[in-house]
Length: 312
Image (cartoon, rainbow, N blue to C red; front, side, top):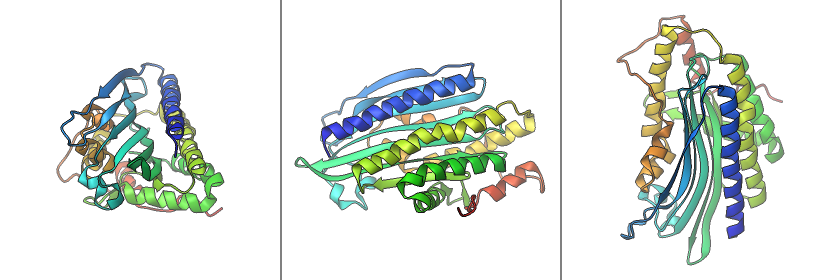
């Protein structure tokens, strides 16, 4: 892999961030993203902490989105944290560089799902030779009051973008990976209704990069139609309180299980950018049980892995 290849990925990622921001501002119609450019200089203490920089963009108090955060980062280091090398001994002592775009959007309306997407590239070398490189990413959906129409559209979009890159086998593998990754083991439930998730994709650079672009570009195709359908749904205090309660699950996953959060914090990453995924308002309630047969109780059936789409 050449330096030019990495720069091509970087250029795509910055353009993707720009396109998604423009589309979300238009969909919201009431707020704009505020950009925070940042740089990190390694301290030079031999600990291998990262350097580099990025652009963190956050939209707050919008008409549709209570908070929407999307960050681009391009960071590097001379040593990886133990959590990253425990099962990858070839990475021990390697220098590395990683670039990615990650987003989490928290809508105001409880009938409009929270969503997350990420696309990233990693490259490690030792003595000038590549020891590892891969692409990773995906997108997933977290409804509070799910609608079958929305979930089916989400998964149809995911399956369609997989078609040129392994077809149904690729969709099924990365859909299953998403279900397994975004799973709260301590709650025995999925974080939402899934989507796509992949990591360590390193078969062929051009094909893998093409798939990364398909996932990144496909996110808006998957999400914006749901925004248009649900943005004006009527809701009351009951639905709002349930939304805030279920946002607590999002916090639990990101802090307890998410590998990206762990890697960022353990490698000396920028805390504000890493934790921008957390919702602006959230609540916990001890021993909460929804009323049997209620719309809130219905959510439980959607938090189990299932095949959403019939076989093609």
